[in-house]
Each structure stands twice: as structure tokens, then as C-alpha cells.
Image (cartoon, rainbow, N blue to C red):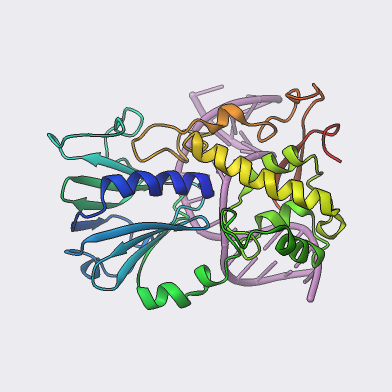
Length: 285
DNA sequence: CACTAAACCTGGGAGC
DNA sequence: TGCTCCCAGGTTTAGT
């Protein structure tokens, strides 16, 4: 799912919707998704929402936090309590259906409304951890730099790329090297940079690395601006229940057989590292 | 060590 | 209708 822009969209919404409120109850409908004890969370106040890579972190009072990974099809939908004044967003109950849906696996009862965790393919998870574990736990500690942070420099990327002969697309998507870039934004960034997805990372010229850094930031910002990508209904939607809009702007992703928006050449598709990989044979070298 | 395929799940859509 | 196959915003693990 959700890559950096989608998780960031969820983060920004939840900051407005639930920070300062208290978790009154949790209903766990699928035990493997909620990893921890509900009683360690019930009664705690939501103090802040953070994002690291593709993970959402909900900071709670008394040294606890929830870490959420949405994987491919995780969603969080906020439904305000009846009568609750809605000051932003326009909640649509899950594209017209009632919540909980059959894909709803965890329900947070929060004063002011309910937060639903839906996940069609059930790959995602929610972990309850302490702030200490937040600092040392490997799935957070081993992440590479955030594309919007100051460590995301050309020099760092030169070092990272020079050490790998793997296709550049696989390196872009390696979370231990760069945090938050997934299949959609890797495909889109490589098109914008004019670089073949299969080009070995160590063969990128300095000019290409400089350009790639810029367009990674650019496509992620665009994704956030449009509220993320909702290429399919059952995967990512915004916490309001509405789809994101970035799929309208895809340059190559899932456009195999269609014309390149820049030059008209037919977009190609191959399987690279088990993932659909799309590119324009004329614009990307 | 590097690379690939399978696993975890539930669909939607195309083709026959 | 229905069957088979491929596809899907991610990551880990087993196998070569």
C-alpha cells in the first residue's frame, strides 16, 4: 500500500482528528493484526502522530506507542460520532458501505468517533510498544534516510548507489537505504529522471543521481498534494473514506501499452524483483 | 554472498 | 456461468 505519501496523508488527517483524545476501547477482530495487549492501550491519551518510512506511529501517554504498517491494503478510516461537529474532511463511510466491513480487523473506540483499521489482504499489522522499543526496534532502526530530511543528500546517494550493482529501482525501494519509496513512486521517479529501472545503481552518473534525488522528492510531494494514490478501491483510501487523486497523474505506473505522456511511445512493463516495472523506452536510458 | 521464488491473503479482471 | 491465470501501493524467509 501505502507508500510514504499515503502514510503521510493518513498522518496529517489523524493529527487533526484524534490527537488529544483518549482511546476508550479496542475491538480486535483478527488477532494476528493487533500485536500486543489491548489493555496496554485502553485509557491512554493520543499525544501525537508520526511517520517513519511507510510506518505510522501513534504516540500515547505513559510511554506507549502504536506502530502501524499498512503493507499492501491497510486502511484507516475515521468516522466521527453522530452529532460530532466535523470541521474538516467529509467522511464517506467506506465508499458507500457500512463500517465495520468484513475487512475491518481492529476498531478503536475514541472519544469523538471510531477509527477503523481495514485490510483486505491482512498483511499489515499494529504493534504496541514502549518508547524505548521505538528507538531500538530493528524495523525502525534499520530504515534509511527520509527523503525530506537533510541527510537525503547527493553525497549519501552516491555512496549508497556506488555500493550496489543491483537495478536502481530495487535500490530505491530498499527501505534500509531510502525510507518510504515503494513501487509506484519508484517507477514514477525513474521516468521523471529519464533513467532505466534496470540500470545498475553503481553505473549512475553524478548528474543522474542529482536529478534522481530531486525527482524522488518531487513525486513524493506530488503524491502528498493529491492525498496519495488509490489505484484500486480495496487498497488505499484516505481516512475520510475518499480515494486519493494521484493515480490520475501516473506517468508510467500501470500504464503498459498506453502512450507516454511526453513522447507518445508505448509504455513497457517487465517484472523486476517480483514487482511490476513500467517505463518509456524512449524517455528512459 | 547474491539472487530468485515462495509465502503471507483476498480479491478483480481477462480470456476461454 | 465458471474455470484458470495473472495482477495487485510490502516485506520476510527459504532455497539455489
